[in-house]
Length: 245
Image 1: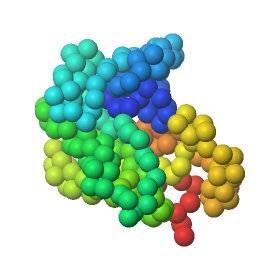
Image 2: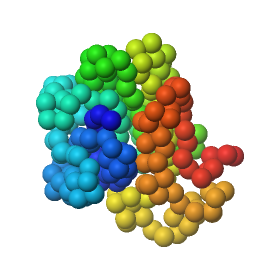
Image 3: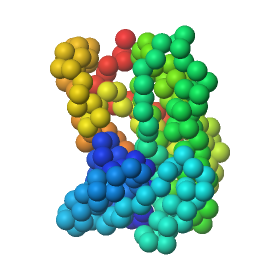
Image 4: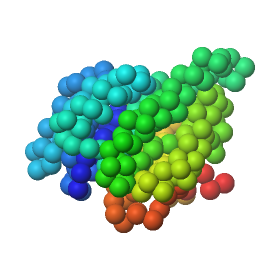
């Protein structure tokens, strides 16, 4: 099938997406930054299941590092046909009156700068191959307008604008660009969240439960597949109807 590069794939949603794509037959480049052990566990699970994967360390907000990452992936696994910019950083809650420009830049670095650097790095191979898939991992936060999350929500809204514009510009090159927007999907980073907060969120979900990383990964896998060959510029929300209003 080809190579899929998933950033921030050593744990959480990224790890589940990497495992799902590998299960579909993609050779997966598991990008990580802080902890190689977590990435190696993801790779080991994929290989144990008969898949192909390797771990690649890189700061995907750094231009030089991104260029080197994609070159390394191409050398080890082959050209990238599917790009999933998933890496994220801290998402602190802060009142709007205390949010600084630096706070905005922290979020834009992950959700605008990093996807842009990655897109630039993978496009030469995608053009040679006659197409590819870019599947961004967004959020339903712009619709939720949750107090304290203005910097994060603004960056996620910008990421969706990138997706739509890229879909128009890259479509003639055979590249589809879509965005998957999860609601709150509990992963490792949410281990300390109090049960009452989880219960309060769950009560507002029409389907009556929390979503799982696998349910996000399923949608990413669809958009990466040939079944989605005529889908581009779309935002698919995976939140059990939480933002229906």
